[in-house]
Amino acid sequence: MSANPTGEIRVSAVVMRDAEGRVLNVRKRGTSTLMLPGGKPEPGERAAQTAIREIEEELGVELDPALLQDLGVFRAKAANEAGFEVVAHVFEHPYVEGVRVLAEIEQLEWVHPSEARDDMAPLNTVHVFPALLAES
Image: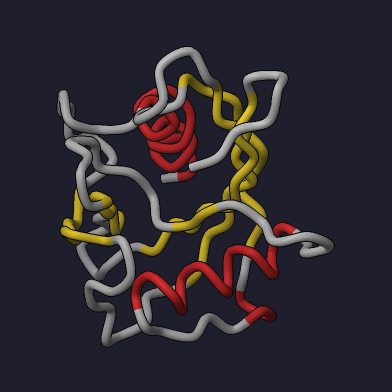
C-alpha cells in the first residue's frame, strides 16, 4: 500500500454479508490482519468505482453499482503500515456468489461483527462492525 505524505492511506472497502450475517474479510499475502476487501483509488476514480474494481480484481465477482449502499467514511489506524491512518469510504453490497482468492489476497474468511478477534483491522473493530451491529 502506498501512502501520501500526510500519513493517510485513502481506500474504498466493501461489506458483504452472508445469510448468517457474517462479513467477508480478506488477508493479503504477507500480512497477519483480516480486513474488508477493497483498495486504493486509481487517478480520477470515484470511491464507488474503486470499490467495484477492487472487488473484481481481488475476489473475481462483479458488484452492481445500483446496489452499493454508502455505510460511511471512517478513519482508523492502518492495519499493516505502522504510523499511518486509513481513511476508508465503506460501502455495503448484497451477497454475491463465487468469491475466490485472487491478486494479492491469500485468505478469505467470513466473520460475524459480534466476534471479538485480535487479528482484525482496527477499521473493523473500531468503526465498521459497531456500525453494522447498531443497524441490527
